Structure formats: C-alpha cells, structure tokens
Image (tube, rainbow over all chains, first blue to last red; front, side, top):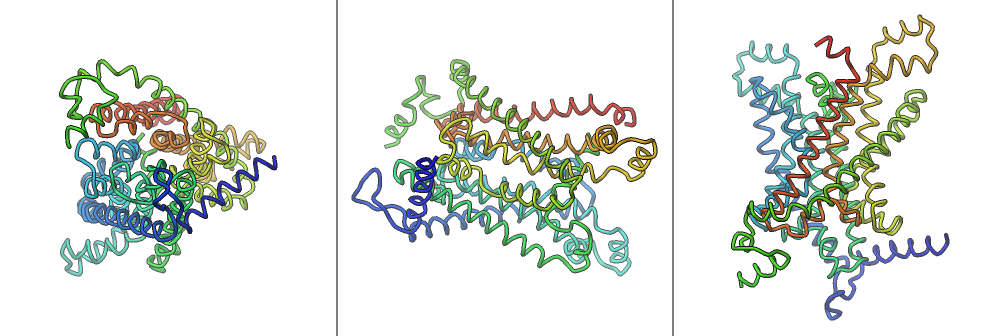
Length: 256
Length: 232
C-alpha cells in the first residue's frame, strides 16, 4: 500500500510542480514547456475562447427566448432544445465542426457557442412564460408596448432563471474548451492533447488546472447569481441554481 | 504542402480521391463499417454499466436522505462538486489512482450520473401528495410498505426523467472515456477527426445510441406506470 501511495503522491506532486516551473520538453530537451507563465497564458486563452462562445450563445439565445416566450411560440423547440443538445456528445459537436467547416478559433468558438445555446434558450423561454400574468397585464394597462413589457417587466423578473441557464452553459463550455486543441485552438487542454510534447506531468497538471478553473467559475457564477436575484424572488423556495433542472423535468414528465 | 498534409492525414486509409479529400464517402463507409462495431459495443457497455451502478448508488442515497433529511445538503453538495469537474480532467485525475482502462472510465462516468438521479429521486419523493401518504398510513401501512407501495411508485415519472437525463449525458461523456484508456467511439472519432466519413459514422452512432437508449427508457416507463396511460 505504501509504495502505491508514494507513487500516487509523487505523480500529483510532479504535476503541480509542472504548473509552476518550466521543464524540458519530451520531444526536444532543448526547449522548455510548462511553468507558471505558459500555464497562465493558456488559462487566459481558455477563458477568452469560453467567454466568446458564451457571449455569442447567449446573444442569440436570450433575445430568441424572450421573443418566443412573450408570444408563447415555439414551446416544443424551446423546451426540447436542451434535450437535443444533451443527446449530442460534445466531442461529436466539436469534430463535426472540425471535419465539415475547419479548424481554428472561429469554427471551434462557434461549436462551443452552439453548446451554450440550448440551456439559456430553454431557461429564458420557461422563465418568461412563468412571469406572473397580473404583472404583464398591469404593465399593458399602464400603456407599455410589447417591447417595453419584454425589456422592463419580463426580462428583469426572468433574470435569475436565465442566469441559472447561463451558469449551466458556462460550466459546459469551460469544460469542453479543454478539447479545443483538437481543432488547433490553444486552451488549458493543450498539454492534455499534446501529451507527446508536455509529458505525463504536463497532462496531469493541466487536468488539475482545468478542474480548479471550472470549480472557481461555477462558484463565482453561483455567487453572482445570488447577487442579481431580487430580494423578493429570493424568498421563493429554490430560487437558486436548482430552478433549471427540476423545471425542465417537470415539463418532460408532463409531456411523456 | 497540401498534398503532403493530405498524405499524412490519409495514411491509415486506402481509396480514391474522396478519401484523400477527407470527404463524405458512402463507398468508404460501406467498406469500413466493421471497424466501428467494437468501439460501439464498448460505448454501450460503458454507458449501460455506469448508469446501472450510478442508479443503484444514487437511489440508495436518495432513500437514505429521504429518511434522514440532514444528509440531503451533504449528498447533493458532493454530487454537484463531482459534476462540476470537467470529464476530461476527471478521467486523467483518476489515472494515477486506478490506472488506464475500463475501470477508470466507469468510476468517472458513474460519478457524473449521481447528481441527475439523486436530485430527481429526491424531488420525486418530495412531490408525493401529503394526502396519499396520510391515506396509506390510515390504512395501516408500515414505513417500508409506504415507501415501496406508495411513495416510490408515485415518484416514478420523476425518477425515470432523471434516468433519461443521466443516460443521454453518459453517452456523451463516454465519448471522452478514451482519455482514461477505456475505448469507446471517442477513440475512433479522434483517430481521424478531419475525415468527414469517419465523423459521420462514429458521431452518428453516438447520437443514435443516445436516442435509442432514451426511447427504451421511455418505453419501460410506460410499462411501469400504466395508471398514467389510463389517465391520458
């Protein structure tokens, strides 16, 4: 048991050392790989790629969800977007873009944006349709136009649920950006995909780094979500992240 | 330069210009479909075994938390943290512990199924109407009878919904299990990721597997909840 534990600890020790201190490359001992500065630069590329994808995905999903939800249109598509999205493996989504469109930042970013879209669309649609009818009627009685009702009543009241969807998307996208190097885009997954260059320590080190990054982003977005939730809505039971999954399921069971 | 690249990419393939251009080639697919059979069966194995084990664990934990409420936040918190770790990373983090192979793939995949099943069993049991529970108690059912004859049957739609989400998600994550050396369709996908025919077949099989398993669970659900069909 002791030697197993020792080798296990040394594996992780070496991997963590890789994150902070550059080491000779496997392929060419003359060049150095890893170390704090390279890992920091890969982390920033990882975040930039993920943020662009989430930005594009939500920029499409939120207006679409608001419009469809406000007019009670496209229920089937909006509700099933998440289910269909889940049935397509992220690796398949990414490689379909690689094989049929090409490699590079734009195709990979778009494939991740497509991954980010369904949870936000479903949550936006569900949130808007569940806005209290009395509030919408009151707004209409005050003379608000449809656009004003959407942007000044339905959107603010839907924000916590929409944001829960964004958080699900963000965690998915940040996790999936790990395999972006398959499409020749650098991310924290680079040492994982290019193990021949970075070695086993680099691969394990990158796995540790990407796990820490995802957990931090997930926790950070959860805190932000609590901060943007209006006080009144916090009183409702389960106004936090749990909103996303149970609501979806209730719909699923209702239709099946 | 392009020719050199094409040669490098097609070194594992034989055939005409369609293959050399990384195109979608029905002839190539017809000649080579048998190479996908074993990875596909591995993929089915990984998915079904992980979901089965995950269901057993999560269902038992949910029943436990149903009786002892104070366990609930601990269980759901732990399964949420497990779920937040990217799958590629988890497969690799487990390598020094469990080594390369199917076992590592299964351990990681099981840990991802827990949250869906646990949360759904819990919400399903919580959603059982108080009246039904009171009526059952009034009829003299013991706690055990109450659970298995009233609460679990009434929670079945939620439980099955959780099982379906867990299954489709696991099909997707199993596509990355090759990072743990557990094989599956992901290995075929990445082996020749620029070749349209390869992506169409291997990716198509993965999506098809998710849909078929989903429909299969839906079918079992219909069989096990006849009263819902009667009501519909």
